[in-house]
Amino acid sequence: MHTEFASCIKACDECAAACDHCATACLQEADPKPMARCIALDIDCAAICRLASGYMARGSEFARRMCAICAEVCEACGAECAKHQHDHCQECAQACRRCAEECRRMAA
Image (cartoon, rainbow, N blue to C red; front, top):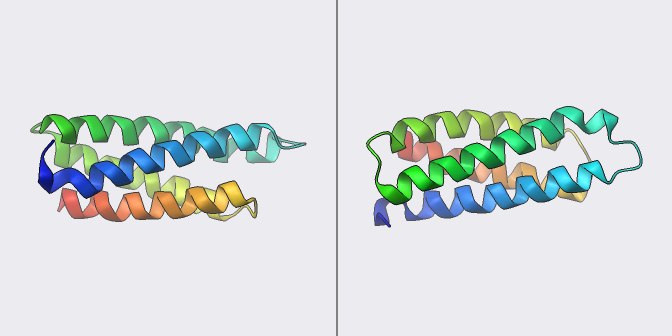
């Protein structure tokens, strides 16, 4: 693993796990319909975080560009999750913000 990417890889992996948890928890709400955008963004965010993590772990020439896209998705997911008062949404929003920060730093 490239040490320059270590903290960003960790943030991406943690964000993906938080997004998976949030999506699952949202689906278990009494009325998941209002959570549809949250769930969709959780799924997108988890996928892009895992992809970015892999690009960085491999030292791909496209890692920095992937991090820029990942930051964009994380910001959107974090903003949506922050709108909901469920603990899992608030925790996911925090993980997304951390990941977006790390990814912006890597993309710069």
